Image (cartoon, rainbow over all chains, first blue to last red; front, side, top):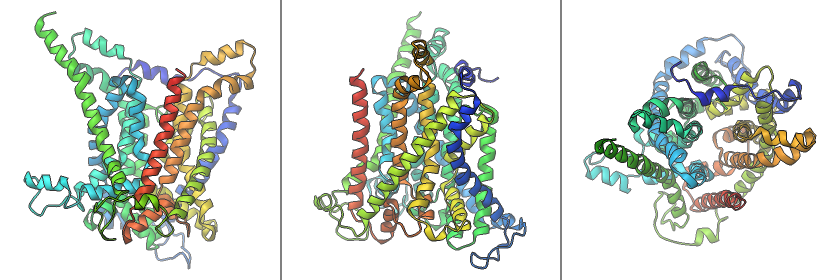
Length: 298
Length: 272
């Protein structure tokens, strides 16, 4: 074990057995499980079968189920560029979210004192304004005449006619902004569980604050870091709103392609792309589960 | 301890105490910058319909919030769907959270994974697969309020489970044991002890559900048929020119939610 975590061990221990047996658990679980099965799992499964339809059909004439694995090869060949771009943009946004989110989560967990709840509210407060409206205001902040672009131009960081809006930088900025709370909250949750006495113990053993952070805090916050990474990276990789509002046709991501294929009625191709994306996601989630188990997921 | 060592550790302590908090506050400022813009733009007196810049101060937008054609209808629809989705998701999700925290059963791991997956799936994939299902099942003609509601309950559910589960897991089981020791039966214990203690978590989950539902665009847009929710209105407006009243609605929503949360927090502090 690379990080023996006492708090984690306690967490994964099964709660005490209740007098009511397992059937009560199933009864409470059933309605939500049914809903998720009908409206999340069944659609996903039917999408897998759609992705194998003969792409020459249409909604009107119907599709022939031909086990057309070819769809996957076609979309991967045609859209590999957008696929790679999605992974790159989402990766960049995730790293930015960690760099911005970790200090914030740390400050809330250990430094905020009586302001803790207020700061937590501040983290989720942006949710209360529509995210489309907030993303639209980035158009203004990153606009050609705005202060940010002006400053960067006068500092020669941006060329004379350099732009921020409609560039990959704008898209990654938007993605970072939109998904930051999903990084901060899981990070905060796992940081908050850390016993502050462990920090004192580190200091007592003559570890510098940095060493204490590296050897104690960081490993103990790993579950939150990974959960936050999943919750940021995956939705960001599938997003198309930020590209539509802040990017240009050359910054299209896989979400834009799926949306366009769907709008154009190319359902089998759209489904094949969606399934590929979901496959990547399921692999990532399974890797996480192997490392951290399922109890920390939700 | 030598002076050097103590000097170093006090610098370290100062950094630990102030620098991290400073960075944290800067990050919060970054998160709030677009909201300042939204508030500012709600007082904008635009010179033209195209372009999106602050041209002058006016109260006109706040006094005539429903001026843009169809916008307030869209807001009303979004509020209706939001309330219904909140009710449904909070009820189903709370039951599930109780099952996951309080009961041992086979398939817990599967339940955990399938609660997490909707939160981690790209909306475009969930939305398009759900639309495909509705169309296959012959619901293509009735896309609208009900299909949107079904979708919203689906994606809000997981967030409710997570929020309520966290609160429930933090409860001291001795409080319930004490109630049982005082001859309260299972139901009385639940109603008088467990439920009041979990209630703040349920309330937080409901608030989160409402804002997720009110805000959703991608899944809603795919499954809405002819219905137009507020985010869909905003999306459409972005193609034709954005009326400043959109920012009035954004600001108002923000204020209402913030006041609700702060009032709750204040009440909690007063009670101790």
